[in-house]
Image 1: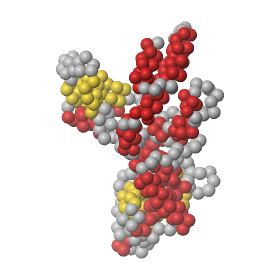
Image 2: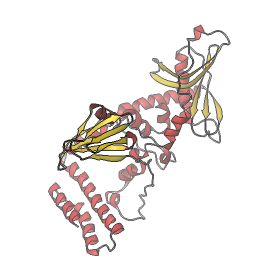
Image 3: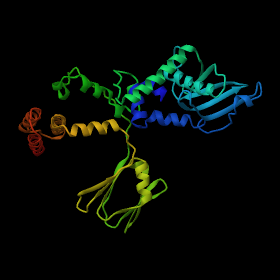
Image 4: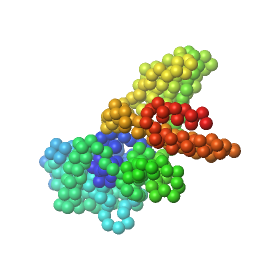
Length: 378
């Protein structure tokens, strides 16, 4: 997490404070590249118990430091006598010029702090970049120590402040970040900096241009169980759906949500597994009326929940946000008509544009509902 803070304070906050996480191709490949060093092998005795010149190797070593309030799983520790060298594996490429990237240097320094607190002498660390097949030696200098201590202190202050840091501006880091679909850097800056009239502009030449950043595609699909008397259970890594006509298995990896209608039962094992994976279960009546939803504790964004309740109690703020939602909805509906209708009726397009502008000026939620309904009829 200290590495993440140096890389991007907003990413650090989303992951560590709010508990957000999404996989992409790079994070999955990183786990694959780490598969060997993630297996715990070798032992790490106290320095006092090591013979002079004795060499040891320990992989995937979990150590902590009470003095620095840090914990780390070190990929590899190489020792010679009482001298220890942490080795960290990175899936990417090494920089073309200079030493390793700053976040990686700080991470290796954190590992040095922890090993020193265990009594080892640590003068340097090593970062191995898998894509470049290069081992880069990182001296643990006073300058690096100061930078690392400053990063640790700032990360703790950022977490304690309870405010999400602003996104990076036009950073090349964003497109490759696995949380770009949650962070939404350009959209957040766009809404924070653009004049109110520009936030819903249809003008393609608008100066508030948002980069087209694409989060990793999720191939999971919703599952609907409507046959009365069906049962849903768990078998291995799949959901087993049994009906009078037989059994069908659906891989859990392919399930985005589960919706059951009427007299359909779900086993406790299936509920627990879906909840642990953050897959919601929605319960409906036979006729499709919503009854309840079961979700796990996968989302920990407390600040968002608190802000939602605060705004929900403020009629003016609620109306202002609802106005923006409905205005955008009407403009999106108009866009869909233009894109998909064989012969878009000009009268409808003009009326929907007028309704979008009218929605911006409403003074009550009832008026906004009426405008939304008229647009939906068109």
